[in-house]
Length: 571
Image (cartoon, helix red, strand yellow):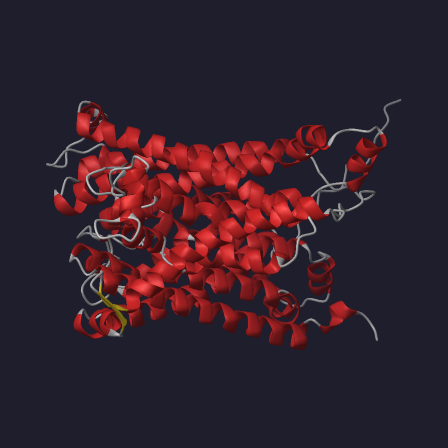
């Protein structure tokens, strides 16, 4: 007898609410912004590299012609070996400094760390300007330098030293974090077995910090490879890829070769990004739930050695910064060193850098406000809303892409894309709005990762409860998520502001006489031979960045008092 079974009930498909459609529309808008201001300019570079001067596709002919140009190949080799040299010098120095901060009981750790982070507040070319005053044609220590066998500071020697100064803080921050994640139980077991300090260093400390060392080396190499300001100021006739791009595009109007060099600059950054992602996946947790944080034990002799090492590094940093400040006040170097405001007056009034300084403040404020809003809203849509998974994956990829794109390459892409007459966005070209958008995109990834980290710390139950109560996601965002994450918002805004004040490579192709920013004006003053005025403007940018940092710290303190009282627990 046949057995009849009831048909399975059809799956009930939940109806999409209009609120979900609103979230989808907002996420699509974020995708459109990233496509227009990131993906499209990068595709424009690739297209330009495959075209000849008449606009016909020639495929890889431009790359072949580049490979046949000895001078351009020499620039490629110069960039590679200089970047390698700086990495081999700066990373060990930063590791030693980070080791002293985390593995000794020396005094004044906060002071030493603060001093070494000061270079982040000024344009990278400040170190190049200081080196010229120390070792240039009329430098204080020129005769000493020649006595040790270095004929002149211009060229490779100056670039290497200046880049070491500029990238040291970046490597230090990574290595301090890496060395802070240590399990004291490993060292206690080693001590119980009578292991020597040297063997503990090579079998516990170095293996534990190897991923931090790899990341620091990759970041250092990429920063040097793509930096424009330092080679422009102190490079002389020593050509590197970054200066080649500028000469080919601005000087020779050879956009095809400029695009080829830009792709070459993009290659090591993409490779670095890929290696860093691979290394991050292989990294195992250094601190488990049972781990005991490592605390160094006092040792008078060892602590004194670490203190002397940190004093030597801090002295070099202060010497570099101090010379720039001193030279900016010197009346007429090196004949009349009497302090005056001549260079500041020349820069702000006579050279009209004052207008550029105001533009810099406007751009930095716009980057901080709109960049923070875009980054945090997009991160919230990705992490706290559901649906449209394919679009989410695409937006996540675009959000991570700026980390692998040098500012010089992004700026060049903006020329090719926004300067096209048939582009409806052509009206943005040479405007302060475009400079602000370019800067937001350039530094987008770090802000995005900061926002995602803050959002992942929040329990998903907030959104689940809100959805069950039919509360729109934007009300939950405004009333719950935003107040809790305000400290992260302040950190993101501060990061955007400081980098917008000091950036050069991202905007060097995009300004007009009316939208010139202060960091670019420094380059122009240097080209005009007004080194004192250039130093004065670099110092002013550093002062403005310092004041902004203090204001952001005060804002963070006030916000923590108003919105983060719950973190302190009941009293």
